Length: 271
Image (cartoon, rainbow, N blue to C red; front, top):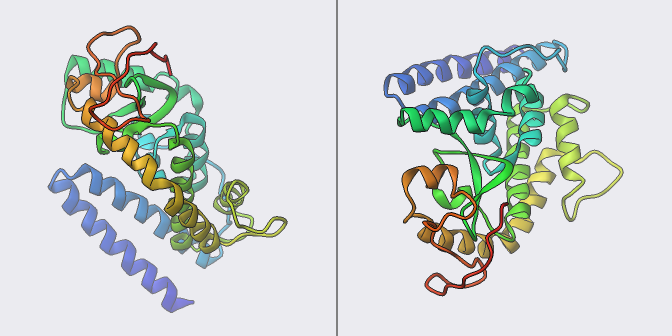
């Protein structure tokens, strides 16, 4: 066990050095990624030492925006506020009350309008047909435009991406049965094809099942999003982040069922 603890401690030290370098380079995306890895490594150290598997949730010193961005980077796909909160509390062990995220999207847009900067914003996912903000579904502004759009098949694809990423993080976390992370993974597994019911599913099996279905359905969704992103790239920078308001005539229309260049006019959807 001492050798394993030494290995984790070495990794923690290396991650801290890399975090300092990322901060010096103002690479915020890399900094968030390293912070996630550091949290996982510290939790693995606690687990190996025999500390309680589920520690009481504590208040975070980070802002709600930082917590949401951190969790979205772990999920890797657009996610509803409730999902973000559940994943954050399971993996990071700190509270993310609904009251702190309820107005976050509007606060971020106001901040952008008052003083736009290169920092990462928490934004709404946008519908692929009208580029309107999807209700309660959040994304990171650092993601490519196509990743921030929602097509007809995106809900399932996003779920599978989340399942894959959480399972992958669970493997790195060396998750124990009964912990908050394990309970979350078991809940995620209930909606996957090809996994056995009535028994604990390993992170490796969850990852494999999610990837298998993704290989079948992701290409069509990716093509839909890519076509829509081409149209959305003509929007103003603010609209690419926060969407087009219902009734606006400035948005290029896109039918996610048709190739780019083929248009149809229809009634807009509030999302």
